[in-house]
Length: 319
Image (cartoon, rainbow, N blue to C red; front, side, top):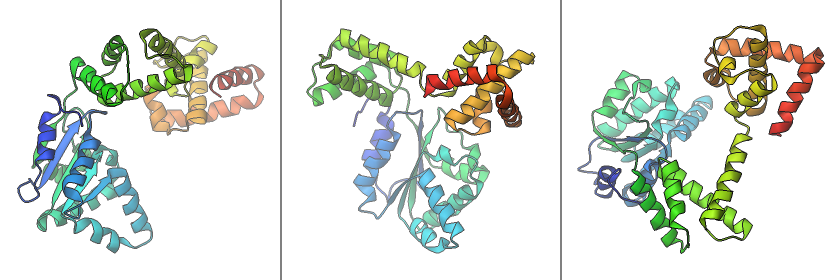
């Protein structure tokens, strides 16, 4: 566990957590990769296990509730969650839009607190905005202790990695740590980059030198550019259709721009299999436009040889 100024308040609370003295609910919030999940896991090991507590991700809670409701067997589910003395819920933001699950969590909270239990929840956000939970539950979660985890500084990320490589007995060029710290803003991404570099060096049978890292960085950037992701698809479609990216995602309604946009939508939907609202977010439009554009391109690809050729070219670059 890495302790520094950016997370010291949250870690102090977790390490000194005592059920009888704790507030009814504790909210820990911060951006991705700052150790919120690790804190909950540590608290569960420290206090949760001996108190008969429950540690659960919010999506797992939602799935369990949906399954119990579908099977008309909610009593065991409610008995488990509503009678616990300590409920730890990770990533509460994942419940956005899940109104029935939110209502169930509200009553779960009420039962736990009424029976002397406590809750600790985490939120991935840069501020404690809980409107998605509805006024009743949001007000209750915000009535307890609310603790932010700030972004670590360059020096903190660099020190975190330095401790990590010493723990792993790795001999690495110090300049590499500086480059990684300068290109990431959280511990999770820094650690991921560090581990990927070590794996790359092992495959290359090379030392953990600055030269080896530069090779890894170039190789990784090439892979990122060709990853099957919406923005990469948009860029390649724009290039293939000879349309500037800014025009493709912009307000233009020119026929050739519309066709390129339709092709991008169709390809993203085919390769990434994400929802129409999610695709709409990349193209600054509403989801109903995504559906109609998808259908238009689907029809065009039946009997337009030139468009089929371009579509196949794009597919070949991502498969």
